[in-house]
Image 1 (cartoon, rainbow, N blue to C red):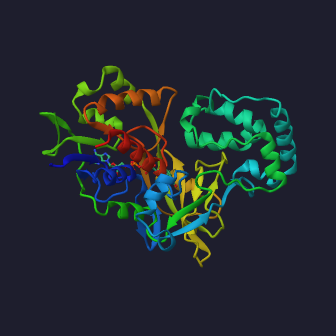
Image 2: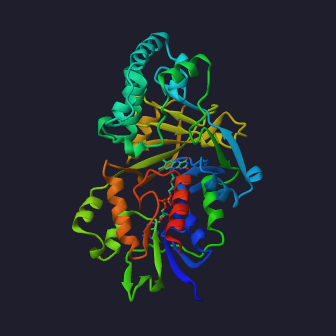
Image 3: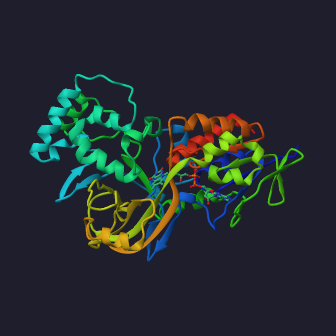
Length: 415
Ligand SMILES: Cc1cc2nc3c(=O)[nH]c(=O)nc-3n(C[C@H](O)[C@H](O)[C@H](O)COP(=O)(O)OP(=O)(O)OC[C@H]3O[C@@H](n4cnc5c(N)ncnc54)[C@H](O)[C@@H]3O)c2cc1C
């Protein structure tokens, strides 16, 4: 029997993953608008150093099926370094406190510790499990002092909005939920937090996350430099660049899908909903900074606009010089003049090398986003057209969640 033909749009981690699953039983063509695979995980080599154009991607997962599948492509021992996260929060005036802050309260100045203890003792009496929004979650779990000095300024820099406008559904599964008793216990006994997905992580020995994308692209039929702008349906087949397909998996941005497909695939209401979906971009500044022992440095300071340094030069930690490369992140677009004046206020003496702005990096969900997207997905699925990935599903996926979503979609559609 002739194999069914399936088109996958996008060779990011989602598109690459689903293409592997589908190719077992189908003839699969991947269309990628850029000249290489990777999407958000792409990297450049600059003078022998890895520059992640977005973030500083590291890998791990709590899903065993995802780990098994992922490691079937790689030699874990020889191609990756396993690293223990060493993250820290830098407050102004040279105050450095390990991350997550609730486990390292003893590193704060005494007067702040006292105030945090008072807050936590008050919180002990309150037993709330459901929260209206992110602000309430933070205040009710960590108290006002930690909220004021860290959670609020840091998160407002990242999300650029009042935290009472951030629904919790958006961040579900990504938030720490220690009880007051656990916070005290972890501080008295100096317990390090190990439950978050990246508290240990794997990082390729060469080429950063581009290495993952390049390897996962092997064995797939990928057509590069093909920016798909129109998808038509004829005689029950999807037509993409004059090729016919029985089914399509779209892993690009749902905002652009509306213009690619005939308008009748979306109700007027869905069209308006998609147009109003919000997101953030990221300006990633590649720098040289002073050598330090950290993987991530979080910066709640209101004195400058950046929120995080990712010390990618430390990931394969063989560096012998007194400077390493790192990415300094800013939410949304920041021009070069602003970048340079901000770098002067950031610790570890950053020296600017280059920067990149990516417009779509963080999808923002409202309380009804998931439900609305689910209904759009269901309608399209009836036409053998499937949505998968961070901006196709408007989901705050990490790489492993994107792979997991590809796995789940494959099982569900069973083609
Ligand atoms: C700052 C930041 C840091 C992160 N750090 C981590 C981390 O450390 N670990 C981790 O696991 N995850 C991390 N993530 C999440 C991770 O980047 C995403 O989960 C993952 O890259 C999403 O992959 P995707 O394939 O869904 O989307 P994308 O990577 O956006 O891929 C979509 C692909 O489709 C292509 N495309 C789009 N439209 C078209 C079209 N019309 N025609 C042809 N091609 C098209 C694009 O060029 C792209 O290659 C981070 C994300 C950000 C923003």
